[in-house]
Image (cartoon, rainbow, N blue to C red; front, side, top):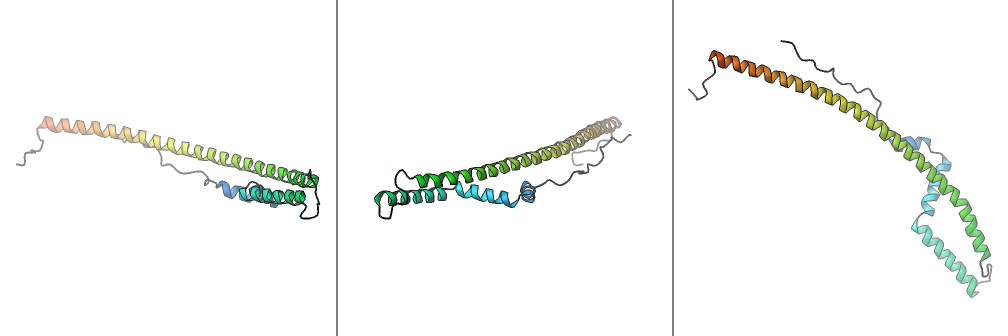
Length: 162
């Protein structure tokens, strides 16, 4: 009786999956780290509350004249300071956002590679399952044939316990 064909054993022929965090950390520069740090600090409630407190104190001191008026109303010096702050922090925040977009592209590429590897392995599993189904069907036919022969020759065992 011929033996049914089985697919050859599956061998994992792919490189290990990359960690997006490690890939990004290898590529990051000092300037990018600084931009991330500034974006994190400027985008926090601590910064907003701290800056609001400083601006409120600035306005109160200049309106009430408890201290010499260094920036009388309409607070032109305060506007200059805020404009300078915005002029420097906005590009740094954009740099940080661009780097995060690059990181997202790296993560998407790694996800794509994982999906390709998973597809390859699933195909191998399905081929193996198909081969097993064929073998099981052939074994079932062989058992039915043997059962028919045994029944025809009348040598079935007595199952009544005799």
